[in-house]
Length: 364
Image 1: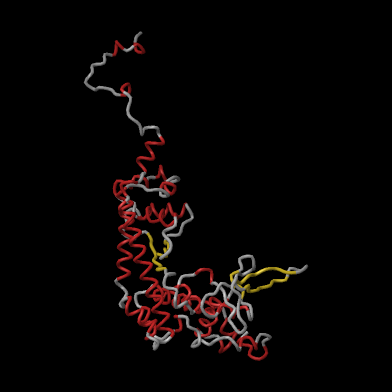
Image 2 (image 1 turned 30 degrees about the vertical axis):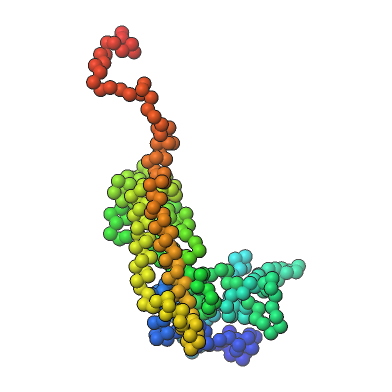
């Protein structure tokens, strides 16, 4: 629509949309501004997405979109369009395409989170698609901004997707880390086969949060990744259809400890990547002379560090309780009815001479 200029029916609305420089998404930050995000998972995401957008753009060029849109179709313009939709579109799973960029309603996705909610619905006999924004219980004063809650995204996700984050959102932190089966793992093929059988990806991304812990699926994946040594017998083909269900509960104390130690080391290593202290970050927020991007970056740094530190505390508490858990061997014995004292009649003394002719069932 932008390439059509004044001939587009949406030209008046398109003219109100922010330029790349006016958008606060980290994708459009200068190299100096990106240094403010050093150590954060946001910086890694920016680099990964820039590579992905370049690949998408090259693919579209090969499909002839450059000829269709002319000089308007550049990598910078494509990045701008994708970022705009990501920042302002409403997720509507019942609608074809699932995302709706609606004029005027898109303005609700500008600025810090509020209690407002954006909704998609059908109306009338012909079920015309409609979008509306409902303000929160507190209402909005005249001249105030009608905003949305952004689906409870973390400070990092807010900045990445919407180019904004609440300056008081330090407690809403999350640090994302990806895990996969090591290429050096001698059981790699077996583990990948098990993941494929259970429709699991070869890699998962876990968000270490200040408010949450691992999901059951995350934990099962990590137990499988850490399966080694005496526990590797569970990777045998005879258990192939059951092994994923085994991973839903603790396998062994060694396996559980390896998983927790791996997570703790990951969090500690991530914390070492930050180059600013909490006191320095707080000074950025309270000093009064910092740029908006510097303040956003300080919030992300503080919230991610808080999430990592909180996760380490939880994991260390889990390590302390390893001896209190029930593991695979105990569960298996219980299922076979063998987790009980042995009856004297079940004990066979190997030193007793049992003569074949004295056994009634062998007598002729």
